[in-house]
Image (cartoon, one colour):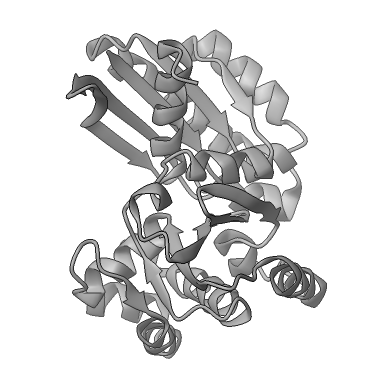
Length: 294
């Protein structure tokens, strides 16, 4: 079975195409292609309230490319979801209608809570040590999703309008941070030690730079060190020194700020980074739906 997931975020749009095969009675997900386009919708939406003409054209052109690629791979099932920026854009529904006509793709605008659930759909914690409780932390351009998981059960999930593109444009208030801190202090607690599971392009980049072995956790001490290191440099210096693309160099420090705050407030000292995403969660969600597993 060939399945595609499209995740239209505030910083980038991603198309993930997977083939799902049954091995020993369990589904195995094989990545066939992943295409990322830095649309940066949040740059328009969080400052202007809508998606401007230039970025609207980028959305239409990108979705046409995604649609054509899905035909080449003979995709049988797909789901396309838009998150924080499209949720906030006053012309979001209008653009979705244009995409339907231009690229024959149906896009859903999903809530922050559903976004958090999709990250949780990866079921990463199920394969980890049951002696710990786990906090999924998904940092995007427009929002951060937290999902708390203990004893094979989701205990708490919440989406916060704190994201890297919002921070880049100075649009996160003290009240936003206060709400996140109070929510974490009130809801993220366990008799077990709590460990974080991070997702998103920024934490994946930091993890690869840390030289931590796959399957091993990264320490909050390294996140603090990386934050200070990047924060002391300009965007251009980060690009030159580390070979970052501009759309990574300008948001990475803001992502690290969010991870450091969340882990500090939740009293977490280590984070697993298993390279999961909303798109991966969508693939799992689609497969479970069409195969009747749920």
